[in-house]
Length: 366
Image 1 (cartoon, one colour):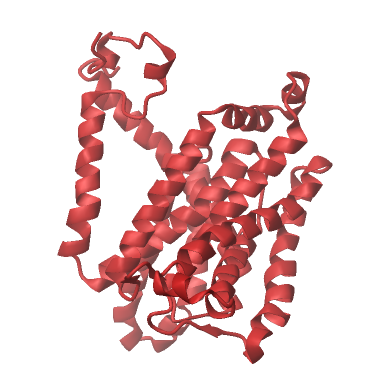
Image 2 (image 1 turned 90 degrees about the horizontal axis):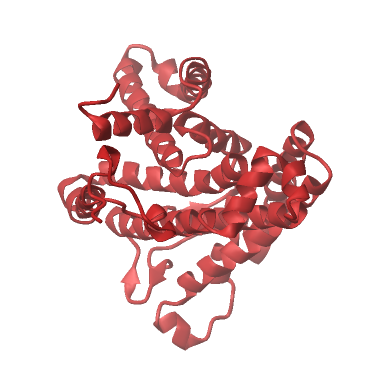
């Protein structure tokens, strides 16, 4: 039976159809159009500034994806996720700059791809270490332990020790040509964009497939009621640690990606505010929704860029306004969180879901 018009009365007949990625021809067409726009549209009709905004959106999506997995799907609150981005970034940077790679791997441009995998593993393991307290604590106490990850990792270990490797001060310089994949030297916003697109798609597909598996169902059961999940035979502690590992690994990939967009890396790129920012992204986009991660990232990056463009013309009249923009940005971030919590607590993804249902059920949308 055709499944083209599901809302009008044609239904799935097996489990495979019910969990298919693209359940109707219309959805397949939309995804093909989106792919064409992302691959052939945006890169070749936009200026470097617009590409840099796209890369910032992709970086935010990758960073918020791990937070969404922990908070939205496993119920483990985290306020220190920027630490795992920093671990991934520094792992990748140290491997590229300091590790004695065989010449053949350098010639083939494999150092950076291997460093991304290593960054994911190291950041995942580091995340598990700070996830261990989740066996005994939850809620407010878990927030404090994840905050400790930020201060121990970035403010102490990286700032005081890792940053000094090789006799450096605080920053690791990344000269042009350092970041390459095979013969492809990533030295422009366009190349960073394609790398971002590949990593975002890969990580989103991996997380969505995990959520459709037994592991994902166990995470959701723990989120809804961990005592009931344990009664049903789910090893709650094991699955919590697995969630921390996967979230940390995605954070490691995020950090390893971000160094391709930087001329130098320092601890200032991973402040504690960035951890708060990522939590705000999923609150605005929608907790417990992959769509929410994407919508929240788009909203936060675009709104803040629009705010900056609005402030810049006023700087000629009031120069101090431009100097205080960071504080204005933080204030707008807080106002946005408050507004969404009051007027749309389910986030942008909920409105997207309502809009899709209205369109699919038309003319019987009531």
